[in-house]
Image (tube, rainbow, N blue to C red; front, top):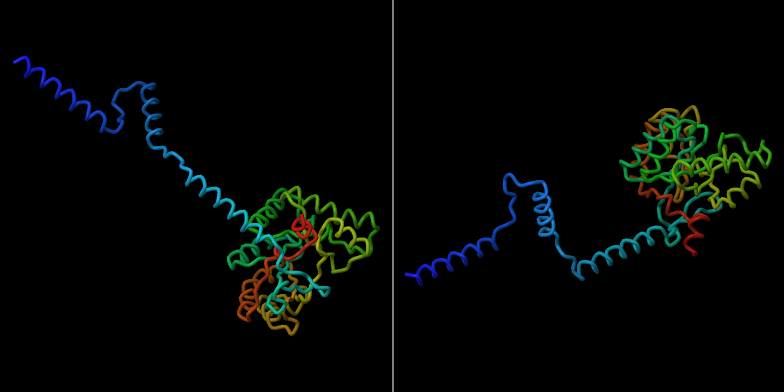
Length: 291
């Protein structure tokens, strides 16, 4: 009888031990806060997957591949010619055009940026500081930049540089660069003088600031005959001035904003690729690539 009793007791102990090892950690009702914290820590420890050498190596190689890809993407693929047209470095015959928008951000720049983003194309937004006077205007510029559009310098107050002293010209350019850097954390890489009129001094200041001096090959939206959506879209796409590498000038205007989508689609239907301005060689990115 004693032997049987001992046998049953030992068997019961083995069964209970096996059940305890196989059960998941449970939260018993009525446990104390300390008990709950201990249970939570146990669950987190049980759920955490240990890192293996293969996992870590995979992550590192993934990061290295990503960094390598970014370096390749940052390398300039286009140059600007002396007539301000754009050319593919390796394929000079590529059908490309560059889009630029001056006098931003006035009333329509953000809407124009959204139109371009929806169409998955880029443009340079050349800004003036008198459109950056308020915190709200500064936020608009930040949003345009965060959407992936490069910001260019179009001077502080859009005065003709040829009518200013060298000191005044310098302030028009440098003060705006300072303001843009204050808002978006980087200085412009492109400079366009008001009315396209530079001086020897403004060219030197732009060079010192490592900006690419830029004008345009054609534009129409300031002419009275083209201040409507239909007329502007038609002339921008069908002008005899359209050619490989054309540098298109537009402005922050209501009719230009309305026509912008049709202009982009019309150019693309003619086989033109819209250039990403950040792939154009500038003194700044050329210097970075050389380092």
